[in-house]
Structures are given as C-alpha cells and as structure tokens.
Amino acid sequence: MDSALSDPHNGSAEAGGPANGKTRPPSTPEGIALAYGSLLLMALLPIFFGALRSVRCARGKNASDMPETITSRDAARFPIVASCALLGLYLFFKIFSQEYINLLLSMYFFVLGILALSHTISPFMNRFFPVNFPNRQYQLLFTQGSGENKEEIINYEFDTKDLVCLGLSSIVGVWYLLRKHWIANNLFGLAFSLNGVELLHLNNVSTGCILLGGLFIYDVFWVFGTNVMVTVAKSFEAPIKLVFPQDLLEKGLEADNFAMLGLGDVVIPGIFIALLLRFDISLKKNTHTYFYTSFAAYIFGLGLTIFIMHIFKHAQPALLYLVPACIGFPILVALAKGEVTEMFSYESSAEILPHTPRLTHFPTVSGSPASLADSMQQKLAGPRRRRPQNPSAIYEESSPKDPAAVTESKEGTEASASKGLEKKEK
Image (cartoon, rainbow, N blue to C red):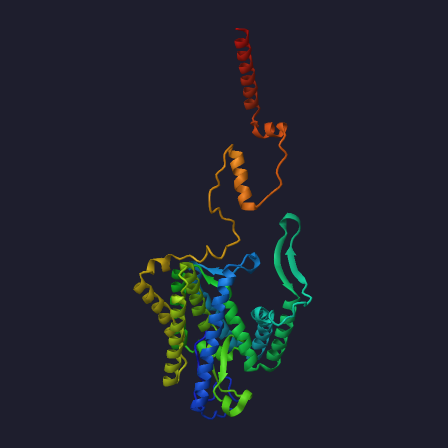
C-alpha cells in the first residue's frame, strides 16, 4: 500500500499520540532535521542496494528465484486495485474495532517480515560464517494432487545458513510483535522495500511510465481529495511505512512524535530506478548514467516533498514530486545523448530468462535432416549417449510408416534389380 509522507504537526494530538489527549511539546529544529534526514537516508538505502541486487536476480539461473515482471496491463490496473484496497482498509477501521484489525494484520506481517528480513540479511551474513561451517541443504515441498495431476504449491530450498538468518529475524519479529517499537518497524520496512525493488521488475520503460503516472494520480487524489490515506497510514499498525521520531533528542528511544514515509513512495520509484540500471548495463558502455540520474532525481523529489511539507504543515503525496523527477530527468538525459529510441525499445524480459536455451549460431552439419535435428538438440541440451548404429535400426528409422509406401518401395527395389539382371544378360 502506498502512503504519503506525513508529519504530525507540532503541538497537535493526532493518531499515535499520547492517550491522555495532551498536546505534544513542539519539536526542536535539530530534531526535525534529524528525522527528515533519517527518512531520506532510509529511503535511499533499499533503492540503491535493491537495484544492484535486481541485476543479479535478473541474471540468476534458478527458476524459483525469478523476479515478478510487471506488464503494461498490470501497471494500468494497479492504481485501481490499490484504491480498492485502501478504501477497504479505511472502511474496516471505521466499522470494526481497530485493536482486532491491527492484531490480525500484525500476525500476518510478523510472518512476512521475518521471511523478508531473512532474505535481506542472508547475503551479508554469509561473510561472517566460518569456512568449515556445517552447511546442509534442505527443501520444503508442498504439493497438491497425485500422479500426473500433482501440482507444486510450495517449493522452497534453503540451507543451514538460511536457518540461522531466519532465527535472527525471528528475534526482531518477536520484538516488533510485543513492543511495536519503531526500530523493529523500520527493520521490517527496509526489508520489504529492498525485496520489492529486487524482485519486482518492470519489463520496459513505457510500463514504468504507465505505473508511475497512474500512481501519481492515485496518490494526489487520496491525499488532497480525502483524508483516507493519512487516516489509514496512522491507524495501520504494520511495517508498511518508515518512521523516525522528531523528539528523539529529548526522549531518546522512547520518543513518539513521528514523521513517516510510506513504503510505496520507496518501492514504486525504486523499481523504475532499478530498470534504468539494467538498461545502463545493457548498453555495455561501462557507465551508469541513467541510474545515477534517476537516483539524484529521487533525492531531489523527496527533498522537495519534505521542504513543502515542512512549510505548509500538511501531509504531502510524495509521488506528486517524485514521479515527474524520476521520469523527467532520465528522459532529458536521453534526449541530450540521442538515446530515447534505445531507452523505450529496451526490454528487460529478455534478460530475466537466462535459463531458457537459445540458439546463438547455426551449426554446419552435412547429412540427412535427421542428423541435422540431432545436432541442434545436442547443441541445446548438451552431450548425450549416442544411439547404436546397426543396419536394422537405420533401416527402420529411414523407412516410411505407411504400408502402401513400403509396398511401393519394395516394388521399386525389385524393378531396379530386374533391370540390372537384363543388363547383365545383354
């Protein structure tokens, strides 16, 4: 779910504030600057590292780890689906008890958060394991049906190192479930954001423009047109937002006056920036011009969002500023370099299926069509055991299956034999 960048007004008693209804003391300028700067840094980290990991993910050869590709049709429908989900959550909070809804959502995100955090820290934790660490392989397989109708529901492969990462992530999960502490919330939020940027891939730049343009309208409408977005963001006790206290300097880790940034404002521009990084690599110029341009555009857009929010003291739809910056800056660079056609014709789908065999050159093979087909299969599938070359097998393979054709072949053989006999007699 997307969410605007929100700032509880200084001195106001809003959702998430003190239960006694007393107004909070105004935050200091230092505390506000620390909160804004921390939000900006936390937004940049998953985009940068998620984009780098998306390149490795796109080149992966394990089909189970293949990323989800967003097509133009998915991008066009996404704002409608997101609007329905957002409005549904808003109605649920209005009709049912907020306590029970958040309890159910907390359990759901508790499981998802542990898995996401474990996947995030796994590459970093591998460096700390000793060389002689006993690492065993495991597989969790859950199927439905039997025989030829058997379908795989879950097929998850992991090892002992992954179990260690899962245990560490579970500690953070229990901490979040019991205390709902903002640090645990941010750890899960960063993990969700990084996994989203890494595993959600846009298939081309046009799809990215459709997705960002649709969510641009979605974000502006639900923030400026209604109070739905801000209400849900403040009532929703789940790690779907990054938060940082503005009164950290006064209250320490028990601070409670938070500025927040929705994960949608990180993941949506992040997957577009990751696409431009893969486009940079496809150009094979050893430069990351479009990636750095879009990354700088994101910093500019989010900085502008924070500035306007601080001036007007009202929650801002971050995509209102991020979308024009993240799309406009790279296109201007492409116009200057004369690479607009290359940018919009780039297809990422060809790179995320490296395990699909491709014929890169046509082999030079002499002989029958059957031998040519065998040679091509050997090129694609690798070496195989050769078939026994006996005369009967060759005759059976080359002879037609139609009985009439077999009769004609025999008659032709007899006719040629009789002609040869006549020539001999002459």
